[in-house]
Length: 171
Image 1 (tube, helix red, strand yellow):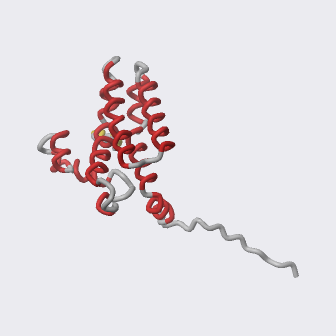
Image 2 (cartoon, rainbow, N blue to C red; image 1 turned 180 degrees about the horizontal axis):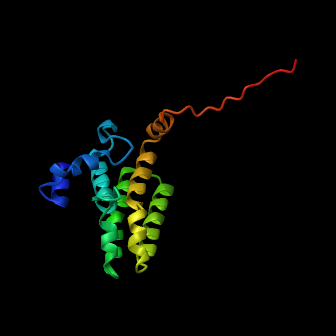
Image 3 (cartoon, rainbow, N blue to C red; image 1 turned 60 degrees about the horizontal axis):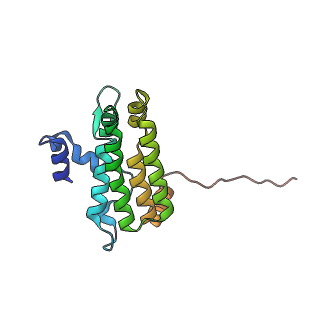
């Protein structure tokens, strides 16, 4: 991860905490916890692509993160096509890892929506800054590959999901 972050964001990437951001950006499965049968390097590459396109740049005043996707969207015609092409990498890796067909269709739908709306002048870059298709796609792939761990995390949110209804008997 450190090498990829340095390659994408320069030598000062580690000083700025980019590698920490990549590691902590997903509230999902830690690649170190995945079974040996799953390609851990592929999961890290998918996460890195998603971070680069969706959350690699911190906006200091508003404390919001954008990625390269809205910046590429500002280039008429070719920017969104380039971004969609890079986004397809996550789908191809997910298919190679064994993600279900329905999940892959959902991932393609998100990329298509990101491409279509992102291509609209003025509105497109703003939409791309808010719509995090790549991050959602990696989260969907993780949930599909590790459904039992995703269910455990949903249950471990610190809140009691049960509803208690007091029942009294008439006297």
